[in-house]
Amino acid sequence: MFIVPGDNCYYDCANWREGYQYWSDAFFGLDDTWDPNFNVRRQPSGPEKFAITWHRVLFIGIHTLWSRTIKDQKHWNILENQNINWTKTQLKNFAHTGKVDAVVILSHSYTRKELYTKYWEFLSDEAEDLGLPFLFLQGDAHRFR
Image (cartoon, rainbow, N blue to C red; front, side, top):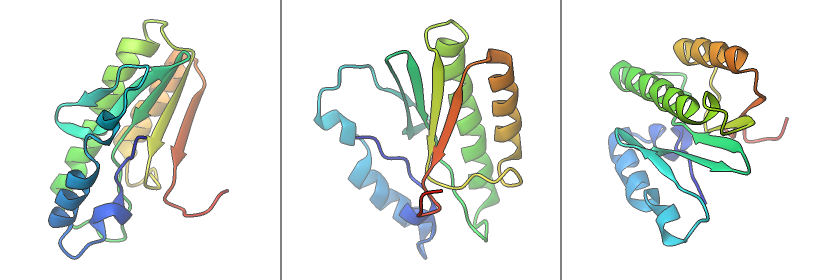
């Protein structure tokens, strides 16, 4: 089981930093409690982000937020840059080397282009260059569309 954090998990809390610590304490390393048949990779600067390959599909978990009010622009910018670097590294190691046939990106929050401009520009360019199928899944809408 893999869990990606989002605004409902901690950022909507009155003290979002404390909320993130609670989330981290509860969910970091959850996948260490079972023995998967694949290698789980984590981003050192953001261990909530993960990547696995399964049946020639690259799954990348990123950390996104959605909020009407950005409480800390520096934190928001760090997350976006970490997401770009993490996705770029995984694509370089697996998609650009022909080790996968498709890419699935998992995210909690609705990643509107105006909130994540750099990420979407990067991802659009990568998807076009690679010519692989990409699927971006997010669960923040709280309903199936």
